[in-house]
Length: 143
Image (cartoon, rainbow, N blue to C red; front, side, top):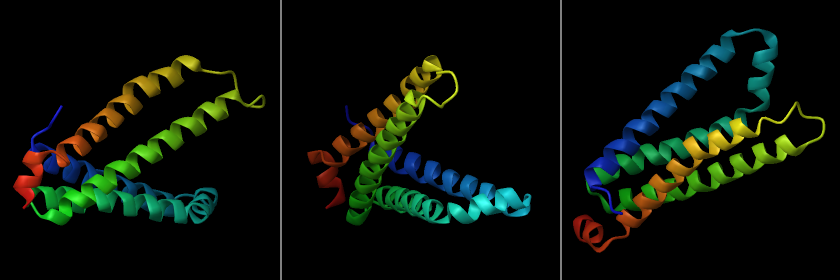
């Protein structure tokens, strides 16, 4: 299944910009919160920076695809591969956390719903984007 390049570019640019703004708002709120929340923020700043870099990659890739720049295709494909890896690792870590004996009662329905409603559609969108960006029509449009 191939998606239109304009849709791909605008979708990933707007989604990435929204994620960056939401992340910045959350960090700002944590900075203004009590000491416990600020301490948590100081422990996770490397993760936050890496996640922000991934979303910036998606933003620039989306803008590059909108402008039909060859580098945009590569950046957006790299973003999609990064998102696939992050989603799979996140899903796997949640399943492992559910199996720990010290964890609270297992909510398998919630885990299955999260995988079905979020993980699978986003993986499918990323896969369709990668296929589209590698198609002969896209290669022709970017040259």
